[in-house]
Every structure is written in C-alpha cells, then in structure tokens.
Amino acid sequence: MTTLILSGRHTEDAQALWRVAIARGWDVVRARGITVPPLPDPDAVIYVEALYGPPIAAAVGRALLEPPIDWLPALSPTLRHRRIELATVAAARASTAPAFVKPPNDKSFAAAVYASGAALPPDLDPAAPVLIAEPVRWRSEYRCFCLDGEVATASPYLRDGALARDVDYAAPADELAAAIAFATQALAQAPATTPRALALDVGLLADGRWAVVEANGAWGAGIYGCDPDRALDVIRAATVAP
Image 1 (cartoon, rainbow, N blue to C red):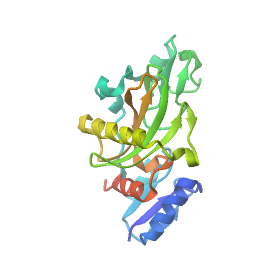
Image 2 (cartoon, rainbow, N blue to C red):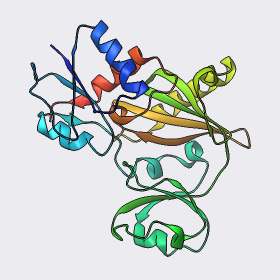
Image 3 (cartoon, one colour):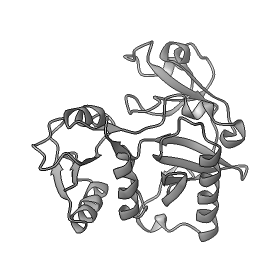
C-alpha cells in the first residue's frame, strides 16, 4: 500500500493532501524533523519542506526529482525574458547593483531583490551556489504542477507582489488558459535535464509578456489553489526509486 509521508507541520496543503490520500486508500504518516516512523510498505510518497526532503528520502530508500541548479539559466532567453546566471554567494556579494538573488533549490535564505551584494545575509557560505537575476515586475504568477510535459493543475499565487489567497485563487479564465499554454510551451522547449514531475512557476510581466519564474521539486511545492488530487499525482511521480 502506498504511504504518504508528511512533515509534522499541519499546513492547509498537507491537510488537503492527507484527505486525498485517505480517499485513495493510502496510509499517511508524519515525520518528526527527519525521523520517519516505520512504514507498512516501501512504496512511499514524500511531501515535506525542502530542508527535510532529501534526508527523509534517504532514510526510507527513495529519491526525489527536482530540476538541476542550472535549469533556469539554461532556458532559452525567450522563455525567461531577463538575465539570469548561476554564480556563487561570493560573486553575488561583490555586486554593487540591485539584483534578485535566490538559492537554486532550497530556502537557505530569502529570495529577494537586494540593493547590492552587501545586503545579503552575512553568514552565507561564499562558495554556495545562487541564482542572480535581473529584477523585473510581475503582474501575476502561477504555480503549475506538471507531469510528462503537461500541466496537471495550475493556480495563481501572486498578484502584483501580494500573495493570492482563498477567492483570489479564482483566476480570470483567459489568464489561466494563457498561463497553462505558456507553461506547456516552456516544458516543450525545456532542457533535457527537466524531470518528468515538477512544479513550474510562470508569470505575466508588467510589459504583458509571459515568462518562466522558476521550477522546483513538486514534493516540496505549495499547492495554493491547485487541485490537490491532481497535484498528488505529480507529487507521487516526483518520489522515485534511488
């Protein structure tokens, strides 16, 4: 029997996936930190915070799919519509111009526009990888859970920089359709290293163009207004044999 492993945090997303898993007849267990109780079956599906995902996967004999750290810079500029480079904290700290800086695949520090490299948190490893991007303004941003090159479910999550919540998840039909169409186009043109299951974020820029925001492992991505049943299909595919 399939077992869904959730973190100890009782978030709305975790509760929604818990209900879907129970309806499917799955077992559900909660980790305490990176400690997982004995599983009734090795067929585990993991949905936890980015920090806990890899050690939990290793502990239960599973692996987690996520885009490589150079995935976003490797995209065609026609899908990004801004300059993005993979660099180190040391390189980012040397910058004197405003830039959007984020860790590639975790939450080790806040992703944000920093006025200069001097504004980055002081305790970062100088050799740690970071993505450095040209600052842009987004009208809206969409989370897309994707499987095998198709969008399984999508939802807005930011509008003019403010987090979308509850009824705000009801996107204009034409905008939602455009987001899904652009995400599908991006998947078709994405690097060969793109995992079959991922959470792809796309957004509408202030100038009216669609662009890829970023991509992350589906196993740690927020659901927002996405269909939790379809999202769980993608999350399941993101947990694989090592």
